[in-house]
Each structure stands twice: as C-alpha cells, then as structure tokens.
Length: 215
Image 1 (cartoon, rainbow, N blue to C red):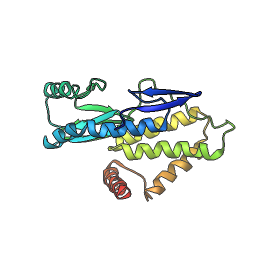
Image 2: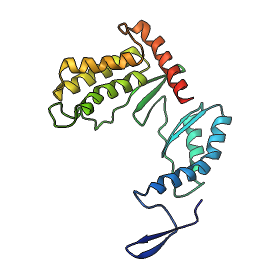
Image 3: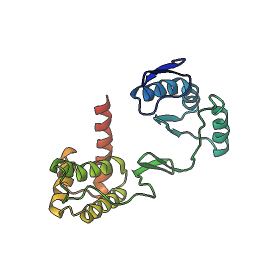
Image 4: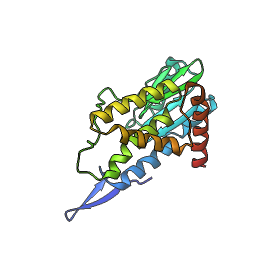
C-alpha cells in the first residue's frame, strides 16, 4: 500500500498521509486493495466456520450458523484490526443487502427486490424529451431485475405489478409496458405464461445461466 500521496493543486504540493481524495478514480482502487488485506482474516474465519462471505465496496454479506451474540463478539474483535474501519451488524433470519432482500425460511434462502423506505414510484416520465431508447430501457431493466431477484412466483408478481403501476403513473402506455416486459421473457426463452408451478424451475435455469455468464 501507499505510505503517502503527494498531491499538487493550484501550484502547491500537499503531503497526504491518511485517507484519499474524494472523487479521485485512484481512491476507490486503493480502498479496495486495502480491504483485500483487511478482510483476509475475516474471510478465513467465515470459511472455516462453514459460512459464506461477500462484499461490495463497504457492504459485507455473511451467511453463517452463529448466534447473534457470538457474531457481535467477533465483530468487536474485527473492529480492532483498524480503528478507522468500524463494522456494524444487522443480523437475523432476514437481511437487506444493497437492492436485494434475503430471508432464511427453514434453511431455504428466499430473495426478492428490496426497496428503501424512502422509495418513491417515480421514473423518467414518458412524455419527457429524453431519447426513446432510455424510456425503453426502464421497464426492461426493472423487470429484468425482478425476474433475477425474485425466487418465488408471488414475489415476482408483486414486484411486476408494482412496477406496472409506477410506469402507468409516469404516463407509460400499457402496450409499451407489455412490449418491453415481453423482451425480458424473450431474453430467457420464456414462451409460455409463468405460473407458480413452472416459475421455480425457470428461476433455477436463470441462476444457471448467470453462473455460466460469469464463468
């Protein structure tokens, strides 16, 4: 890691010994490099305990069979690694990670789209002067997220209908919405109506397709 940075601004040199400049493309890279070393012992401990560990920037997601008391005790120890990085836990049988909600139901992980309490059903208005390709991408991208995130047919239906209502409120025509919803189904080669009976099978296939794309 860098011991320090020398910055030049308006003809003056500054010796930066802690932190990173906001907005600098180098800052995020340095932070990720530092976190790689910071989290090694945590990852090792989680893996050895039969758990799973994921991180996106400064959000960690841990699945492990520990009591909440033991987890909090471990977090107190991890917080001693670097006093400038203090971890806070949100533990339980359900958790929200970024825009994904995960719930443990009898050992099965159920997922759906997570919306913050401050979420409002506002999208780019259809009657705005923005290019049409931007408007086409909104129903497509939002339903694509729903079909990837929702592990149950009920969760998918709820998300789809909430999205449809939000788009209608923003003046999107029904025909336009259905057309771009169908683009999502075509992407996954879904040529028959989704039901509670076939949704789970198709969801498993979608997960398999995503894994192949990553590999």
